[in-house]
Image (tube, rainbow, N blue to C red; front, side, top):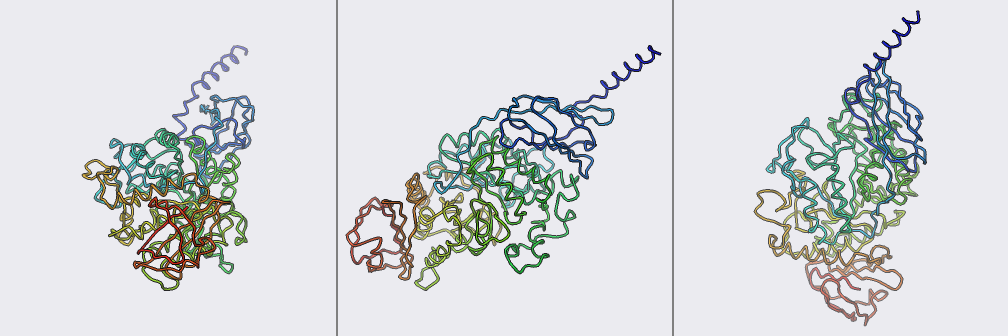
Length: 616
């Protein structure tokens, strides 16, 4: 009897040893790929994906780490593990063992040492430069077409809606150019994997939340670009999308749970009517359709009210901040996601990184709609959205007409700017509004090639001297023009000289036209003057109604000030300066930042067509 028992024991041990398999053979993915000790939030969600993994029994034998709970959802191929990492836990590699029937699956999982370096987040002291990576510069032609992808589309620069080959190396190689513009931060359109039919060059159809699209480069190259930018005093803002994923994301064919998506069958698209969210009379049907409908058929709507999905997204943001040292986040299609979970996302990010700035895209034509989404908004009766910064779409919408109309008519020309800013009382914090003239989703500020820079300079001067956080869209300094009526690609053109075979190099002075060099010289002069200038970033604003064609405003901080004067017409204007005596009394002497000349205010002054002064 004893002999038989010993034999059975030996056989059992041998069988157990034989059934222990490598993680690679049973686990297809684990997210996040690693984590850190010393985080303020000691709870970590680990999503494990593998055939039949849902019902496996997990175990962790690592000092300071304990399993809190296990979520087994609808798919048999996902298990969501929640663990606690005590503050005393030391960095190292722990082993997660899954007992799945007779198999023991062992997964090594690294806990890195948190270095304690906090990002230097962006603010009104910065000037953001928005770059679409695919269209800026191709620094590595070897990553243009990759067979490892499910949809390895070819580069075709003749097709405005195809991939053109721009990448992270191209941006890094042109950091000298970016720095010369005087900008202090770059915002890149999304860089994460978009392994989608057609290529999704724009980046807004994520198929892997932890991987840079290999056509842009690697995770390490992204981190290196950020480090190189930081050496120059340039911050980096990451574009994220939590409202939707790409339709080729692995989730879509095997949803972790039935409620992972809104309308999983794709039966309803959003109505694009954001007014339903803040409309006190909106029907439940309309409001639900706005938030839970799919953005487009290729972008399934994620359900942020699923706590496991939301925890995944929250940790993803924290992972990228800690891993890459990004200095801020721009969140795409912000109001289309569920408000309360998104407010919690911001709270959790700021728990790890106090004061961290996040700007949300809330595309409204009126100020009340945009202001509704800013943190602490008195207009929002549904709860505090907790969003620090909102995008100033109402100003963008009127910018082209405001600076190019030649009229004294009330409500037109620069009166549009005055009227727009007069509604800033609706914002809880006007300083935390991202102001821009155009971006990748809008018509260019210049619809056609300009003959002169009078109106263009006034638009740039306003952008860089008004309240808020200014954002410049790449190519604006090169006088890129276009409108979306033709195609999205018309406002997302390649930078000449950034791609193999280009015969003109706009990154170099000799490759630009005289008008382009004039534009860059002007923009860089004003942007560099703005650096560290707290009168502009922190000061109060007082402006005068441009009923005579002149727009005059003052920025003031204590005993320092700057005064901006614009003639918004194509004709000379002779002006009674007593109108502005409260900020420009006769005899006042000021220095013009643009020309370097000194100006003395006299009772009557004549201003040339499209005259512009930035006085201090």
